[in-house]
Image (cartoon, rainbow, N blue to C red; front, side, top):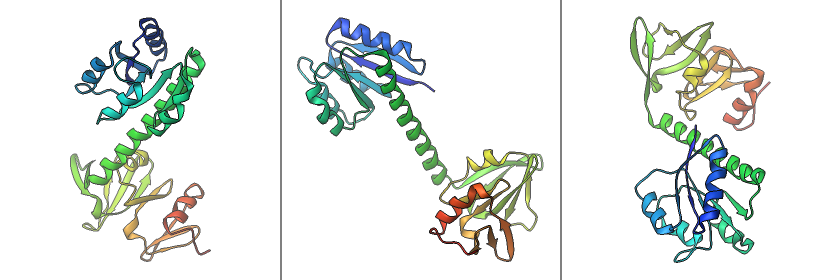
Length: 240
């Protein structure tokens, strides 16, 4: 995973130093550098960029005005000699504010913050996609079988296999895959993992105890690592 970056500074030497710093960070990919902010603005309107390093004091338009002018919002790191603009920069939700001359360790720290934010954004997008999707396909009986999320009651792990218990069939669907693999494809708003061997549809849960969950008369154990998640799901209260 790499962050696609551009650098903007009207001073040629400062831009070269900034570009050199970007090249030294393994997870950054320098796409372009600009001395003229209006050229950078045009470039951003035509290309997908994750992170922008930008000076504040530039002729024609300041870095802060530049950030406010664009409808799309990549992440920004301000690089400037003027500390007085720091508060306004943070009000624009910039990732970080670097004062020239910038040491490499301080530069890397800012980049780490950007990468952490990017990973959170990617994870959030994946969850949103999972919530929007209504089904998954699993390999069973030598074919790919479509399984609606609303049809799943609970999932049980048996070594290298899973049993997917369904409303529509008294016999569980058996597929060769890991719990982690199927958990990543299920929307967290609809399913909860209660044990290393069990994932349950939240709508199928009929009762909860501190160490177990019920689906009708069926009682399934809650693993110690998953008790907080179960407690949070039912509002922090469980019966012993």
